Image (cartoon, rainbow, N blue to C red; front, side, top):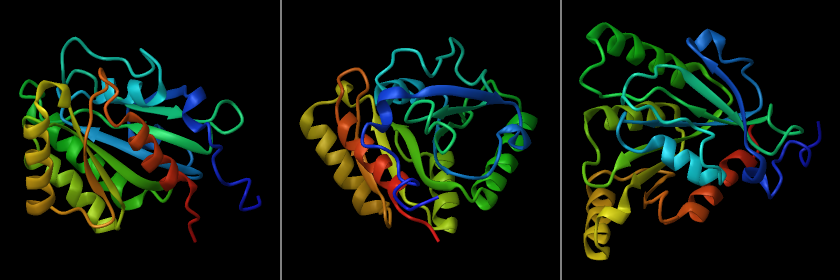
Length: 212
């Protein structure tokens, strides 16, 4: 495959498709192509963010009971010709109190393995409610990415719930207290389309970069 053929098209997000749901890491498919993982607390608005990024209302299904869905969901980008090579991986939501302790432990072990071993993983989007950012499990996701040297886009969702001044202060504080080497903090609202285009550009750049 030539270098040009390995790059995603400019209209990458215009034809996102559902690939599969996998109950275990062993079921997510071949470790080839390039993929970006989405991680976040169960009530942080991860599905809303994913739907906003792909421009569809229900590609990523939302659960009426946060924390209930423990499947790994894979979405292909670029339509049928590119979907197998460029993927978004929606990891199970974490941090919801009603999830049994044993499930939380298994989830943590699976995520550690995924971040350590998945060679097609080229970047991580960590979803956090801007009103309650950087909780312990969020920081764990950032640590997993840092160990692998993966870039992180920390999307601070539900930014429409705060005023401009509060948003600016929150982002500035997080940038100061928890810098992301090779990544960035970004206020985001799927309902108001705040920074949707900018987030797409970051993800497209990750998927476009050549890897040795």
